[in-house]
Length: 557
Image (cartoon, rainbow, N blue to C red; front, side):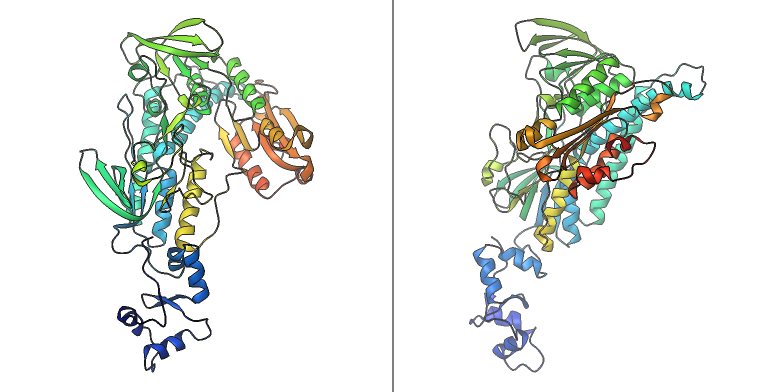
């Protein structure tokens, strides 16, 4: 540990005497007398650093035994990094978690650097500061989902009396330009925010080259070395490709879709993850011919009762599903924007081979997986352990790796939720523990999330399958109901397609351990119930709550 040395008194040291003389009370005749007056009422000897008392003998000795001298100094107001380091904290990765941690550290007057670099996709696409969520994830996905909802609203509006004669069409370029303009404003806002907080930002690829040292390489190939007392890895993940002929040459991923400079046309989406189904949903909502190729089940890890209802709804609304097949080859038939591609696929249960032609093959590959960006940042050079199979980084409950000065947050963590708000929360709490003496840790349980499929799905806590596995089928009670949103009754569509499910632990006074809702504005509904679950709400308390009428959320009360 590179902490400022502690000194205990009495000990003969001219250096320590010089540091302490300036703090002597007026009238003290010597160091010993001054020390006694300053530390009256405390156990002896007493520790001092840079003219400041850090604690009595017991406190200092305890910190030494627990290897927490550095935290002891910081909690007493001392700066953390000695002059031998360039920075207190270097964050590798400029996504949501990394930026949140960097700005939080700046609040405590720490010297902070952020290194962020986006390796272009096989098609050459890259983006600005902000990470996956802002540039190629949550933000553009939700905006394009909204574009699809507006199309449905136009159809509904006729039943509400709106009359229009001209044919309504969707313009892909207008949508993507508007979405990208908004994302660009966010990129700029992040850079301004870092500058205002005196956080150094470099658009450079960070790679460890030795203890406490990283090499930063910018897009021109210029290399610089920086040192820091601590590092935070927040590099996120990127889509994994299929590893078949033609995938990188002709396919796109979610990293390309949201800024695609042409309408993708007839599209094959490969995968059954939430990103795959979300993209298939909004593309179909914009009027495109969409097929989803599924290897096994939909929405692995989510409640399967809900997942199957989502699949049924999407099929009823014109999305084709090819189940238990995987692509084995992609060939270009015709160039263009879009061109024409032929996809050959093989059954996962037999030897059947099928072929199909599409304008765009969009392997949104979370069903196959995303790869953590951890294998090419020099972790082996400093001894940070990763899961060799997945690339994920194991950490303790304080987001600390096996190397004490290296921390990690976000999607790269092993056995943790891959959600933007989780990364932000973990990053902020980590910094507060490091520099403000806080003790709160990130809670990875009861975290709410929403899948923005055409029929939105909000979830918090255990799925029914996970609850049975954890508590036993005899110890859980499931309450569920179908419902019909009032707004959908006038256009007479999708009667009883919406659904709510609450899972309770019988052995714990029917405490709610799982909440699931399928319907419009599911995320807005789920957020409130998540707060109640955090407080340990029971089914009895839920039943005693007066609902708001007429809204979808009242079905859960």
